[in-house]
Image (cartoon, rainbow, N blue to C red; front, side):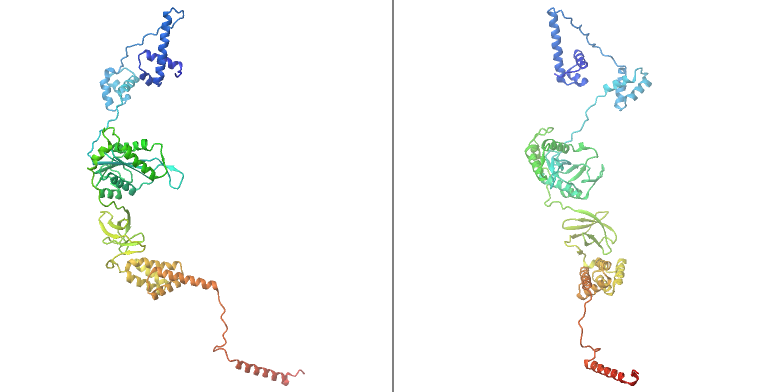
Amino acid sequence: MNVLKPHLQTTIRTLLEAGATQREIERVTGISRHTIRAWQHRFTEESEANCSGVATGSQEQTAPPRPPAPTATTTSLCEPHRTFIEAQLRLKRNATAIYQDLVDQFGFAGHYNSVKRFVARLKVREPEQFDRLEFAPGEEMQVDYGEGALTRVPGTARYRRPRLFVATLRYSRRSFRRVVWKSSQQVWAELHEQAWRYFGGSAHYVVLDNLKEGVLKPDLYEPELNKVYAATLAHYGVVADPARVRDPNRKGSVENAIGHTQATALKGRRFESIEEQNAFLEHWETKWAAPRIHGSARRQVQAMFEEERAHLQPLPVLGMQYFTEVERTVADDSCVRVDHCSYAARPARIGTQVLVRIYARRIEIRDLKTQELLRTHDRAEHPGTVVLPAEERVFNPSRETRRILAQARAIGAEALRLCELLFAVEGRVGQRKLWGIVSLAGRYPRRLVDAACAAALADGVYSYRHVKALTERLVTEALQALDRGPTAEPLTQQHELIRPAEEYADLFARAAAESLNHERSPQHDPQ
């Protein structure tokens, strides 16, 4: 038995003698009922021992009996005004305002604390009431995210909690559960698609939270869904019903399913991979969650699901084709650029903004405001591809064309001729090649770029890649020549400027004779 301090023992004894129950004493003192019950037995034993001592003529002095507890209760001064006070409380008025009105209107003579105590007794907190909604089979599915169990991060020794996606059919409470590391608009839509495939059909509408993966702009009347999610719902014939902000009770079934999963299936568990946790969740749903008897419906979840299955909407043969959306400006060649490829955008006008939806195997060009489909193309496989019919090519030069040709003229005559020829063949759509050619002059000498253009014209290959390869080859050859330095040429023995050896011999002989005669002349006598 717990040892209580003397004043607490006295308090328990006094309350017991006043007829208070153990539960009331626990609420007042905070002492557990087990302790109160033990002390009650002890007080009873002491009382019986005292009574037996008096009966046997014991000489010991016993304590005088305690006076009986008062039975009458004091009537509050507020009691005559109970009706008025209750009416004010229904208006959500506080004790201070009620006290002031009592003084002003009824001449109340009591103190404020008397009103405060009386109001506190009248304020009985009633539990919040909720209306339980009933739904037809196959009518509604609720979805939400929670936290999964600790899972090892791939390639590391760390564990963290992935996101737990739960989709619950409102009628049968049958649930689909999956964990993922990361979420996005496409992942959110893919999880819905997996849930419908798991159930074998889709509900008529889905209730979701206002998370960004589903709702871009929350609104009570016209919420704005993201395009991928909206297209997925339309593909399966489902209508979205986002709950009001901070109103999780609208989707209480999935909230309870998440809590049930976390508290029962995943509590205290760790998994080595996402796949392992998903396999366990599917096993737990099939073996334990589906066969259970639902608390409020008093029926087996699996039995209700078998009843609901026939009311689900049939699934389309093909799954959802996911896409990404980008905004593009129609260039002056009437094309839009997507992944380094050009696609015809007419009837969109040059310079306007269009919306481009990029699928795995095709692209769609739509009006930015009305979402009207303007053009569809098969997606090009190689960068640099131009998807533009010949009859739609634009051949009249624009300001950009003139600017390119002016830069080509500054490089050289051959560069200008090649650029003009390219524009005449391909039109404005070939301006990207022209920009590539004239940009070579910023990295290599213009003389070599012009020589490369001349070589390309001679080869009959009108391509930026070919001109670039020729320019790089000419630059490499020039650098190699500089590395070798000047070379000595072999001496030649015959040339028009070189005379025969006989003429040089006669010249030498005549010069020698003249020199001898000159030395023998008298004017050179040493006297």
